[in-house]
Amino acid sequence: MAMLGFYGGTFDPIHQGHLQSVLYVQQYCQLDRLELIPCHLPPHRTHPGVSSEHRAEMVRLAIAPYPQLALNLLELAKNSPSYTVETMELLRAQYPNDTLLFVIGMDSLTQFHRWFRYRDILKLCHLLVCQRPGYQPESIETKALLAEHQLAAVSDLHSNTQGGILILPNPMLDVSATAIRKSLQQSANIQSHPQQSHRLQIEAVQAYILEHQLYQV
Image 1 (tube, helix red, strand yellow):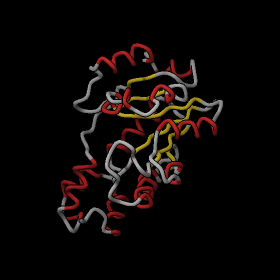
Image 2 (cartoon, helix red, strand yellow):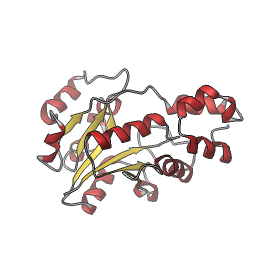
Image 3 (cartoon, one colour):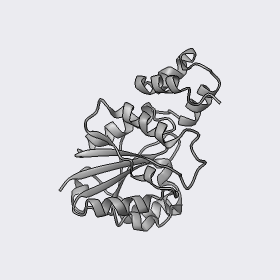
């Protein structure tokens, strides 16, 4: 029985915060594989300004050096909003006997009770929650969710193939894709923004953005 992780997002663009998070999760939880799933039409936020094809290619370039990571194009084949529960239903059908783990940030956990069919998600997979700067599980709804589903240790993930929530002690990087896009839009050349180059820290993604003149308008 394999331990399979999945991390969804717009990746607009993928940056060092994303990459370091998934590498940490894969190693800390000893996942057999962790797949990044670029979403086509996010239901709870504005649509990405860069095409799905560009975002997927940037993910592919970013994870190329890491064989334990993979690109999953499942959601890009849809022409409807990307709801996590529907994606996990497809993945559960594909991997009926494996342990599935969906990676989210603490910011998402604080809103998880608002997600479409959120309780059904926990019938399909575990949640792995990465710490985020400025977010704590303080609301009544989040505390109730954790009281019912929180796991104490990585070893608890092996007790069932779904249904648990594990909060990870990950290092926190304050890197924002929104800030990255804003900085890129203010410059016709990414290389003229050394501070932004430092924040991205994914050289292949930088080169791709420059080559295709993304985020310039």
